[in-house]
Length: 122
Image (cartoon, rainbow, N blue to C red; front, side, top):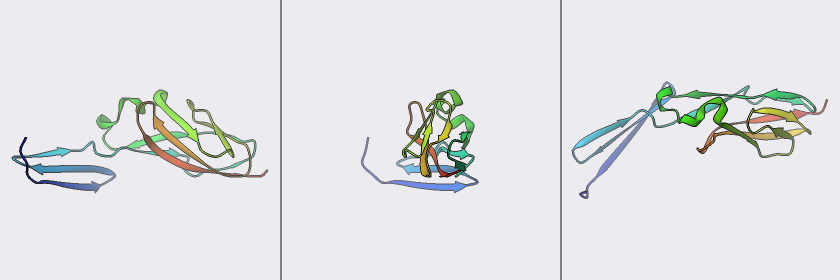
């Protein structure tokens, strides 16, 4: 390995990010740069006592998705006590009025997407 300069150019177009690294004698292009999950429905409003199943939709080339972005390998979590979410199925139960942050991640990867669930009293 030799010392030198490295130039990184990142371009986002049509929801797909690509990066080109120009260093030494070659240019490397990677179209598997960013994978984002959109949680559907996004920012739903629920009444206390309701249940709702969330789903994740991914952007970026499917060939670039980590293997654990299949529905069976996704893990769901909620950071607030206003909602409970089944970590395997994405089924949300509205427990009390307020906002609940919900996050989806791959079983072996970091966060892939999130949404806020608004819970209102019946």
